[in-house]
Amino acid sequence: MLKLFSDLAAALGVQHIRTMGDGYLAVSGVPSYRSDHAQAAARLAQAMVDIAAATPGPGGAPLQVRVGLHSGPVAAGVMGAFNLHYDVWGPTVSLAARMEQTGSPSQIQVSQACAEALHGFYRVEPRGEVHAKGIGTVHTWWLGEPLSGSLASPEG
Image 1 (spheres, helix red, strand yellow):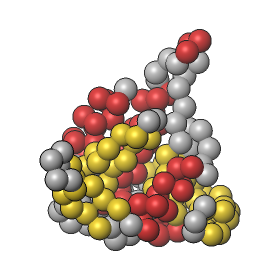
Image 2 (cartoon, helix red, strand yellow; image 1 turned 45 degrees about the horizontal axis):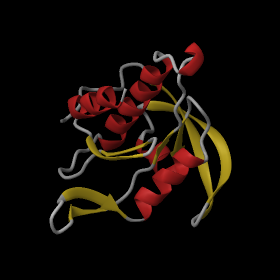
Image 3 (cartoon, one colour; image 1 turned 60 degrees about the vertical axis):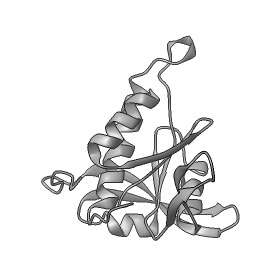
Image 4 (cartoon, helix red, strand yellow; image 1 turned 45 degrees about the vertical axis):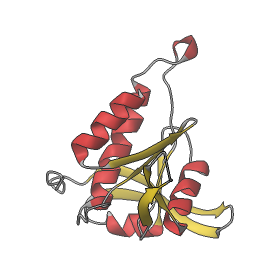
């Protein structure tokens, strides 16, 4: 399943950063800017939920994933002295992680900034406030379906 996620991320022009246990970190709009970064991330997120739902887990029940999205600036660069790897960090990455951690299975929870970036492209339903560890109370939304005719092809 992770290979499917990575193949899809590459096809959508989203950069897979790392897999940590059962977590999958990807970023859109880095290292090259793209105006549709939030839309590309939303397309990947919805596909990940769909892939998991089509994958039988132990006992045959479909797998479920939680996905969190946030939009904002990140610090990015090559890390390490011998085992070089590209990474992103900062408050934006932390809030995206909290969106995943406080989400629900088979749902995509988005921050206010991400909901605003997706305005006019996706339906978003208010979830309400959640407590994000180390951040505080944040307003969140559930990502819904794309709005008809609103999604152009990815910039890549």
